[in-house]
Length: 83
Length: 489
Image (cartoon, rainbow over all chains, first blue to last red; front, side, top):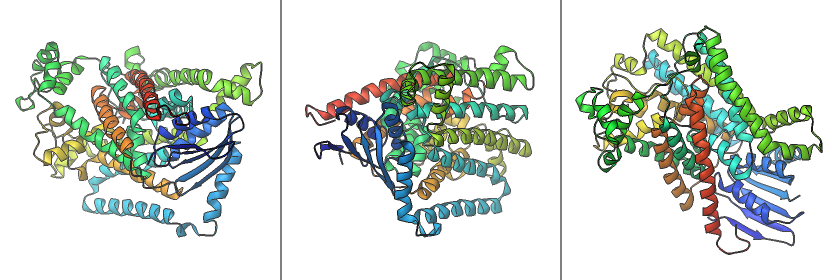
């Protein structure tokens, strides 16, 4: 189990921090968003609910758009578009 | 945006479960089973002896704390860490809301005359201990109470943190040998002057000499006494709550708005030349930006006050100062201290009971754990089955599990080698910090600042400084892990 960050399309990236607890998911998300260009979309996979609260606040604060947010049985898949 | 996202969440979750009755979902069923087991256990205990009500108050308030901690993702580690690491003030704001409300409920309990709070001695040890504690919480991913609620979410890494805190504290407290060489001679001579019972051997072991030779020589108190405001209402409400907790919390919230929220808020609201009204709306938006955390803060404040009141009333009813006296009356004398006491704060506390668990297990394998002040004279090492504050901690795990199960957020998570290593090392640092500071983010911060004891703000300053250093260290770790790969994080 390791953090996975990869480019999966022209403007699409995947960050998988499944299995990681605070502060990994939010800190890796911040770092990943820093590598994206405006308009790029990050698919974020994580399973630590409390990180989600911080990631929502990060998106609001930085103006990034949370375009899809699904949670099922503790596993979350979120799509974030960089402003 | 956030609302759309919430709708998407509700849609995704809803679609999966809408066609099932509430009891048809396993999570709800397991949650109900936990509630039923705790209720049955409580009835059984009361049938054995009605005096177990004293312990059950801890269990049920623990359950309540766990429910709201998980509901609001209420973790004080994230209050300092996320502020420095990702610029998010959400949890810091929630924590300050809880502080303000608990200060009012604590003042009300003090007016009723059943406040169980004891001030902490003020000294450098708080700043140093809190700094170590604050550094540790960045790596464990949770504070002392946060690790318990995350354990209730099925996170076995957090359980590892709890175990590490338990044993590390017990080891530090009972440690003697090479660490004694670091003890200042003044502490040794001051400890010797206290004329403690010989079996405690207070001039051996760094923790005993630290407590008897340093901490006991310090002064502490509540603001009402220190300012000479001794009116029945003005002391608790004006001095302790308003001056000691509410005004400092409001000032910190203003600082958080200015440093971490204002810029993003004004951009989102498209305000170029903000006026006072815009800033006030901005501060309100900061408070309400995470509704669940704010609600949890309010409810935790109410619960903590209610807990103090309930325990205080029971102490009056049974005419005791400490649960140890009740245990002795019930003929459970194993594990009591030499004064027939056990750890029994009467309010929300985390680390000391965890130290007792560690010490109890070490005692069972034949290690001498009672020749020290912490366990031998003050807190005892009762069997975990009759450790009332210990049950509060277990209650937090159960309470968090109940709500995590019902919100479909429960998931068994086995830590990777990296998170397990962070849990053990970070937990050991939290244990060391908590013992040096004489408490954790709950006992040494939350319960103190809300009762007019300013030592808690010193703890927060130390914890914040430690958190800042921890974030720096964590970033270095991430950079090192990433190496030279351009896409790597």
